Image (cartoon, rainbow, N blue to C red; front, side, top):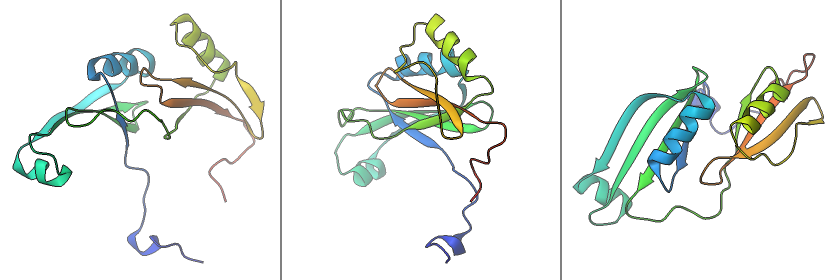
Length: 149
């Protein structure tokens, strides 16, 4: 059965946008922990932007970067609304050695929810960024097909 967007030809995920309380702090975190490489910085403001968000005088700053050379992550800071307190987005980064990743994060002082846990066809744990967005670090079993259907 074709899905609703089949005719549009979905190719791959474009990017993940993360709302931050402190753009500089988040940039430092993603750069130090994930090797975030800036590819674009943008400030959005003016009449068109104000009309889109419905707030006079609104402006937002965005820093777009690459993680692992392929994952596009955008860090956003808004002066017209407070960051959402409840975090519902989960980013997941695949690694070759989940235990080495855990040790490196512990050495860097990054709190993790648990040690790596084996389940199903993977081993994983969850950490949080400075704004408490959950980030999963996962290593798939060598014989699994996590993206197959």
